Amino acid sequence: MKINALLEKLLSWAILTLFLVYTLFPMLWLVMASLKTNVELLGDPFRFPAPPQFGNYVNAFKSAHLTLLFSNSVLISLSATALNALVTSMAAYVLSRYKFKFGPVIFSTLITGILVPVSALMVPYFTLIRTLGLYDTKLALILTYTAVSLPLSVFIIKGFMDSIPGELEEAALLDGCDFYQKFFRVIVPISRTGIVTAATFQFLSSWNEFLYAMLLTSSEQVRTLQMGIRYFASQFTTDFTSMFAAIVISIIPSVAMYSVFQNQIISGLTQGSVKG
Image (tube, rainbow, N blue to C red; front, side, top):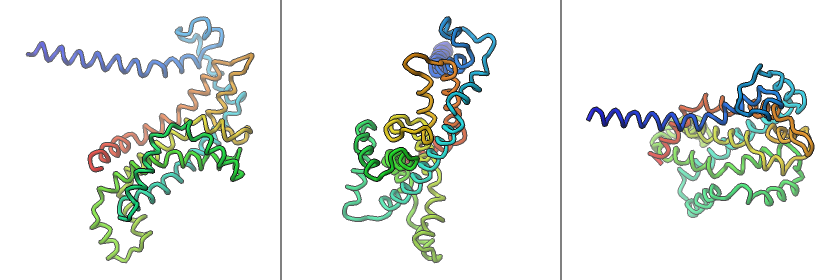
C-alpha cells in the first residue's frame, strides 16, 4: 500500500512538473529572446544570451514610442473597466432583485452574447462607431470594450448578487436609505468580490485586445500598446529582439493585475459557482 501511495504521489508530481514546464517555457523563452541580439536569436534560438542586451528594452521605448502607447492602453483599459463595472453591477442588480415580465428573456438574451465570436461583431461595431463619428478616438475603444464584455460581467455579478439575502435591503430601507444609497452602500460592498472578478477579466481582455484596436483606430495618437508592437515588423525588416522586449513590457501589467487580485478572482468564481 505504501509503495502504491508513493508511486501515485510521484506520478502526480511528475505530471504537475511537466505541466508547469510546458506552461512557463514560452514565457521564459520570450524573456531570454528579448535579451539577445538579432544575430544570436536567428543563429541559435535556444541559447542563453551572452551578454544580456538590456538595451533592447531602451530601443523598444524609443523606436515604437512605447510611453505614448502604454499610457493610451492604461487610459483605455481602466476607463473601460470602470464603465463596465458600473453598468454591469447596476444591470445585474436589477435582473437579480426585481421580477418583471421579460426579465428572464432579457437575461438569457444578454448571456447569449458570451457565445458570439468577437470577429462576428466587428462589422456592426465598425458601422456603429463610424455612424456616431467616433472613429479613431479613444472613446470608440472604451465603449466597444465595455460592450463586448457586458455578457460575461453580468453573468458573474448576477450570480453573486443572487446569494445576497433580501433582509439586508429591507433593513436598509427601514434605516431610511433610498434606492441609490441601498445599492451603493449595501449591495456593492457585499458584491465586491464578484465585481472585482468581473473587472479583472474586463481589464485583461481590454489590455490584450488587438482586433478592435486595429479596426477602429488609424493614427498613432490613439494607438494601443498591442497595436504598436505590430509595427516592429514590416515588409522588409523586423527587429525581433526589440519586439520581444516590447511584448515582455506589455505582459507586465496583466501579470501584476492577476497577482494582486488572484485570491479575490478564485474566491469570486468559486462562490459564484456554488451560490449561483
